[in-house]
Image 1 (cartoon, rainbow, N blue to C red):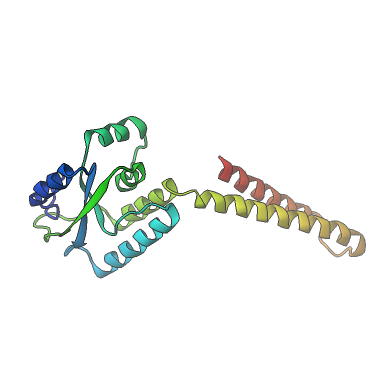
Image 2 (image 1 turned 60 degrees about the vertical axis):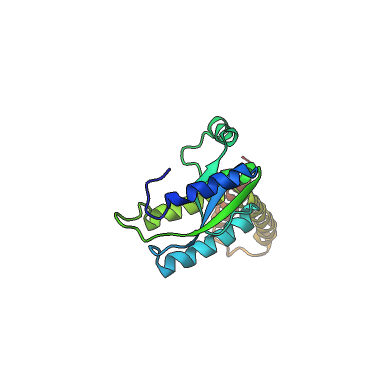
Length: 193
């Protein structure tokens, strides 16, 4: 298990005791972390709410990677997930199986400091949201359709306007329509693939 001051080893008997009751996953929920700033706690709350909403997974607030999983789950993860940076909290929640959380209060870190910088947390947030939701893909498809519709309306308007008003600069309309149309097609293809 992680060598970390805020993961108390005295939780291990509790994890084992819950496992003996038939739970395949026993995860820990950090109620309070004295090493986190108010800003980090605030963004953590927002992240978990947003993640649950966008992914549909019931990930507990402040759940940690300090957890007990059965061999069956470990084999599923090792054999079926080939990602380089796997988001374990999300994957384990997504797999299913019986799970229960144990709350604890973290101790103040005695030595060292967190290895996650602000930008690491942003990267983790982005990858977890993209990996566990189809909503960004749907947004891409919808934006693509919108751009394609705007390009079509603009093409019709420009075609009619060409015969009625000669003040439109030559080539501008064609460029605008082509850019909108190709942007729309690219977004649709991106969303589908």
